[in-house]
Image 1 (cartoon, rainbow, N blue to C red):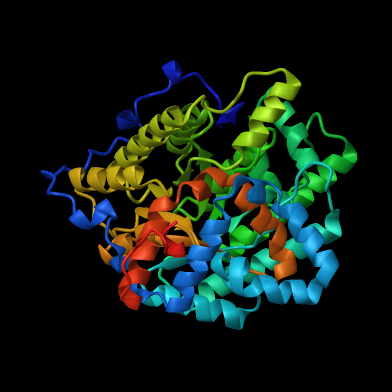
Image 2: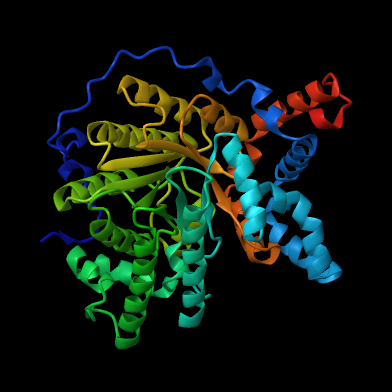
Length: 466
């Protein structure tokens, strides 16, 4: 029986990833020259877009390049909605920001977007944009409604022929209160919590959890049952990628996710966890997850991201007088991401049936690094164990080029009404501000394709060259 405490051992105590499995590593082949297309310099990827899509993307990215506008977009949208009314505000937003980043509201709209995406060689990873933060706890009725939305996401992901190996994203705080997750995180730091105990709770046993009062235990058991229903509905159908959130809830989310992996990843990798490489502890958490999955005999799916909550994490750490959990600079985050990427690709090359990874990044250097390492390890571009991921409406020059080169590429696809997705759009604009301000290359490639299509030359006076 394996006892799991904080999931945060020191690096020095962890085994080398080469020692995690007993099987021999796959024989590496001599690397060939990486495709020149992976320089991502050619605007040809955008030739599949309509003129309207080109113009919309240029306009939205231009707006997103103004920090003052992004930082205050939530307030500005609230004011606009109050002035013109919800209906007119929705009509204004639908053809612009909403159309750029959201697939649609109903299954008909979503299906139309997904079919076009599939025709371009891209795979959808549907995401219900529901999550909670501290102070916004909804209650069991709302969590049950969120469960139904998640189950509908499983159904749509599986029942439509949009792609093979469908994926979906899941925010655990849509089903469990953040306050409980904070308390669980504190308990994990104080005492041993056993994975088998959580698995039994997932199976429906009325488990008692020391440190939680009666109402907290009841809510935790209800939350685990909701998660169990989603996992049971998705097994052998849809891969469920559990998103990471804030550091004050992540240990609890990871522990529950590991319990779900132990129960449902025995004969495949259906439940995945997310690792945020802008956190200083990310490498040790990933290595510990590899160790636990090896010891416990279940498959580990990893969504590797840089992270999206940097500003709030730093402000909260400063307010509470504790060390900043985020790497001090962009270069350190890059080193963290690329190092974790190397660890996972090595593990996947040894046991592709046991380990899987989605390289979820907009960073071209990391994408090339992954492609090069796959080549060195003799891994197929579309072998199933390694795939790439970007957000819908962003980084299309990378996504489309990768798909054309034969790699498995997923786009994170939120859906819902303007009203339902508005908080998501505001959060993503603010949390990904660094990315949005750094998309000059994509804007330039879009402009070049627009100029080609209109027979124009870029000039100082052309508004699209700015």
